[in-house]
Image 1 (cartoon, rainbow, N blue to C red):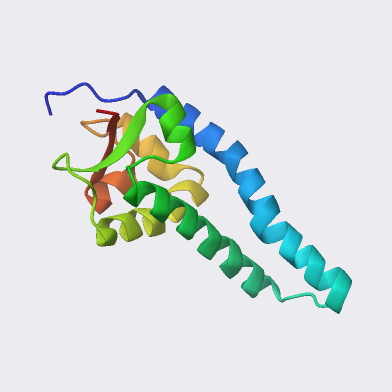
Image 2: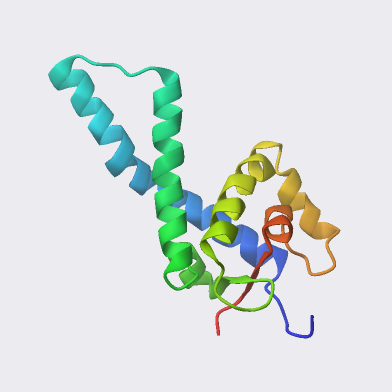
Length: 138
């Protein structure tokens, strides 16, 4: 690849900022509804349902932003965007695969992030496998 790509540090800073933004999203769309269910109806949903709720909420957030401009709010701040490996807008299957692969990439002690230290283009493992890449916003 001939173009300059964002540094690993810049992408990690974007992930950290994204985490802070997601606290607000989860507070509004996860915590408040479940608190209301608990206090009004006395319901407490099983753990698997709660995990599924978080998974679906985050999927909606990321897939919508990635599909509409290739940037989440944090990516906009750091001037980076998600593209296909060919430099175009990623397809829905690429986005879904990237989202699914990002979970083990992060949850296995960040192994998919450390992959970027070995990758020829410094891309994360979930990007490499999904056929996507993080680039500077054009």
